[in-house]
Structures are given as C-alpha cells and as structure tokens.
Length: 363
Ligand SMILES: Nc1ncnc2c1ncn2[C@@H]1O[C@H](COP(=O)(O)OP(=O)(O)OP(=O)(O)O)[C@@H](O)[C@H]1O
Image (cartoon, rainbow, N blue to C red; front, side):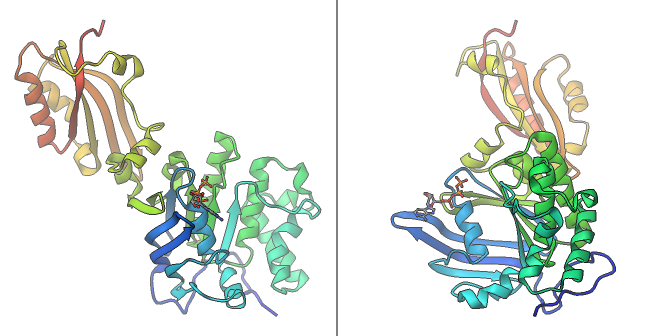
C-alpha cells in the first residue's frame, strides 16, 4: 500500500533523494514513425521549480515528447531523466511508481462524469491504495487550493470549463508530483478563463515549488507564466531561452511566426504600399529589450534628430519585468544621409534596426 506524507498544509514538493536541480533532462532523444522523425535529437532540461513552455506548431512533436516523458511511448534512443532517473527503456512495472511523480492536465480535462468532484480528485490516491479518510482529507485540501471547496459533491457536468480544469489540476496534484505536465490545458477555454487558469498554475508553482512543463501552440500562454521557453519544430528544439529574450529577439522563422499575433507588426495598409526603393520616407522596425530598453531612447532620438522621424506603430511591453520594445518609425529621405545616421544612432544604443522599405504616401 502506498502512503502519502501527512501534511498540515500543502507543502513544497521536493524529493530528498535528488541531488540534481534538473527535474527533467532529455539527452539526444529520437523517436521515428516510419519516415517521420517525430523527435529528432531532443536535448532539454527543466530545472526544479521553473515553468518551462514548450511551444510548436501542429505536428512539431509535442505530443510525442509528452508521451515519451510519461512513459506512454518508448523513444528509439536517448536518455529521459525524471528526477535524476533515466526512464528510457524501463518496463511498465518499473514505470508505475515513477509515473506518480508526474501529474498531468489535459485540454479536455478527462474527468469521470459518474464521479463527484472530490472523487475525481481523490482517484489517483484510490488507485495508489490510500485510505478513504486520508483521500478525502487530501481532496478537500486540494479543492481549497484551486478555489472549489463548495463543489466537492458536484458532478463534472454541472461545472464550467474553467471549473473542470481546476478539478483536473487538483487531481493532478493529488499524489504530490514533482512535475506537472500541462498538455494544451487552456486551449478549450475562453481568454478570461485561460488567464485565471494560468494565474492558478503560477500560484501553485510559487506555493509548492512545483516544476511545470507547459505544452502549447499559443505564445500568449507562454508569455503569461513561463520562465523559459523551448520552441520545437520538426522534432527539434530550434531555440530556447528566457521568455522575454525570445520575445525580444526571435531567431527562427517558426518562432517569429508563432509570435506574429502578439508582437507589434507594421500595419497592413502601410506594409501594402511599401516599395523597395524610391519613396519619400524609409520605414524602420526597431527592437530593443532588457537593460538596453531602460533609457530614454525617444527623448535622445528627438534631441539628436529634431522633427526628423515619425512613430507609426508599436510600443513597450513588459515580460518577466523586462521591457521589450518594438516599434516602427519613418525617416524622410530628402536628406540622403539621414536614414543611415538615425540607424547608426539606434544601433549604437543596442537596438536592432531593420529597413523595411520605402513609403511613398503617408497621407
Ligand atoms: N503513432 C504515430 N504514427 C505515425 N506517425 C506519427 C504517430 N504519432 C505522431 N506521428 C507523426 O509525428 C509527428 C509529430 O506528431 P505529434 O503528434 O507529436 O505533433 P504535435 O506537435 O503534438 O502536433 P499537434 O499539436 O497537432 O497535436 C507528426 O508528423 C505526426 O504525423
């Protein structure tokens, strides 16, 4: 029989036999389906207590990665360490206790409709052989954590999508996992409910020190709560880093495309009339982030080039308390050297400046 640690409250979930700070470490993991390399040499780590976003388009390899992480799928080669133990190649029997260290939440919640909310939450403990009084005590504690104490006796059909996902989160935490895998957990929810679920996940991450892997195809989700993000494409990690720096300086085409909905873009009607040469103004995109964006860039630019540029679009966002600025300016071409001087001025202040083309008519 499996017992759970008695707890006055829900305490930080740590494993004492763990020397490493990595809860997850993948080393060169491959998984092929015929000609398709679903995982094509993935190396990745999630440190204890962090929220790591894993983002990719449809077909990038996210589901395969999750299935390999929870042992539902065997990889062809490579190492998958969970809390320091390589699970690659383990038998079903060997995997079972390790799976309890991983909680999962799903897009469609996967609740049992014939069971009450508290029974759903307590189910993993029932399977693990925990006594009923202890199961119900734990379920009550978890329902309080997710703000659903009043729904303990309700059935899932009477709950909203957001409430169902809260139940899913409580159930995932029942066996005190070291790792929470979130598989598109907010994809079926409206924007406001998505924000409340993300806030709950962040809260749980802080309170319990729980490591979360957030698998998603939406950058908005990553932006909301992740500390770091890894972008997966065609089975490979194409870039990885702190969320603010990936937003500030996406390097791959796929990251740029995934960000296009939430980063300022040159307005369509202006983009349409851009020409590669011969206009009266040149349009620059200007990107600036982190410490470089703390200064008074616009005041300095105005002082150096009075009445010489026009802001057409953009602004400053704050991600993980770091300013991330992206804007578009026009500079007249009547003084042939002016655009180059403005560009040099901005580049000297660590901005990334790109000439997008010439505008012929801004009226
Ligand atoms: N069981 C399978 N048999 C054959 N091909 C598979 C199998 N599972 C996945 N694939 C292929 O592997 C690649 C990665 O698929 P995967 O489902 O991991 O992507 P995904 O990023 O989760 O996509 P989505 O966001 O659409 O769920 C795809 O080309 C897919 O067609």
